[in-house]
Image 1 (cartoon, rainbow, N blue to C red):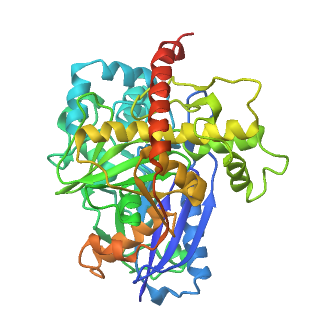
Image 2 (image 1 turned 180 degrees about the vertical axis):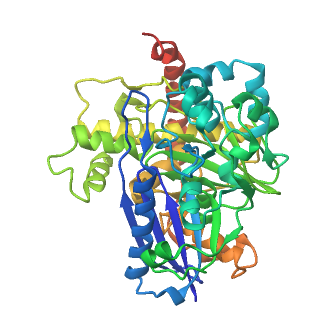
Image 3 (image 1 turned 90 degrees about the vertical axis):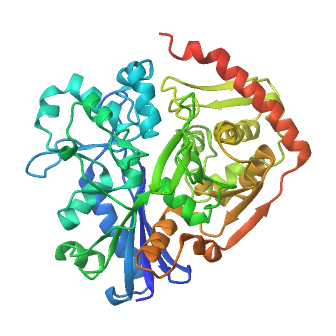
Length: 497
């Protein structure tokens, strides 16, 4: 019993990772699923499709690693934040899983942002006032689907749904609860003012437990399907953001974790709750003495995927398509010879929190070729992440090291570009699926395989170190000022009919 399974229920896929007690990754398996958009601004998923994806990915990870149920000491669970599922009194989902990408509640979010109640709720919950938030989704549901709202017995997330199927218990960890806009990051309880605003009761939400909370007694049908013992300890875990920091070893306050997957995020762990006076960042509870601050951008690798699908090479569907595209950008100098890209193809979260923001290529001339556009896309994705770090620098101590994870960071070109733009050394761990590794590491901590989470750092193997070029950093910082000015000038146009 020296192996641990980490589960990461993501936006586009679920990944399961099998890890030894020393941190050696034995296997990684994944299952993709679609994002459904039956109406404009909707972004939903079928919770039962995701449940199946979890079962199949865990089963495959165990089989790939040639493990038996006796080899698994514990399972750790993680998931994306901000999902919302309405459950009936009979424990049947009345809705799909409404994801963070859903913006149907934009009017409710904007009204809340302009109110005194909204500012107080942000300061108490640490969740920005944006359509991603379950709080604003509930306000939309109350206004636009009153019958559904009245018939709701429970409001839960996708991870709570999976765990209910396994154990018939409604439980939620601090960090997932903290991302609902309904949880007080100082009292570690459901926030009374937020509940009153949403017109829901605390008993319509799950029991709040620490991230190390252990569940046992899984239903036999699910345990057998995955290849697990029904009594294996299942650790409730945390959000994908928290687990990504753990999975790259970014636990010290002078370290920042940057994940660029489908979306992207910049996160730092601190020892006190810190919110921004302009509500530009999030602050989510991890434990009674740790909080995660930072921001997420809607526009990470999904933007490069869009470019590949629409403007890529004829063979752009091949498995190495992204590597080939990124390689084309290598000869292009910083700034793409005057071509600047605002990457807001899906609106934007931090630091602008503007669901109406749109993508822009600026400065196009006859000399610009496909390779320039690829370079501009990569730089735009990283400018979006850099804009978040500029806000964090106002809240906490200076960052000395970036630990990078996510699909885009598999590219050494992307990592070096990140180091040059941020002006900070970038470390790229061997395992880029940081949230899954973090879930496995948290499981080790929960069952006392390791004494403290700081020990995870010794398990992390660094693949590459990238030192910044001072010349390029100065150039990028000038370009970022232009990027910011361009956004400010265009912001009024984004919401104009």
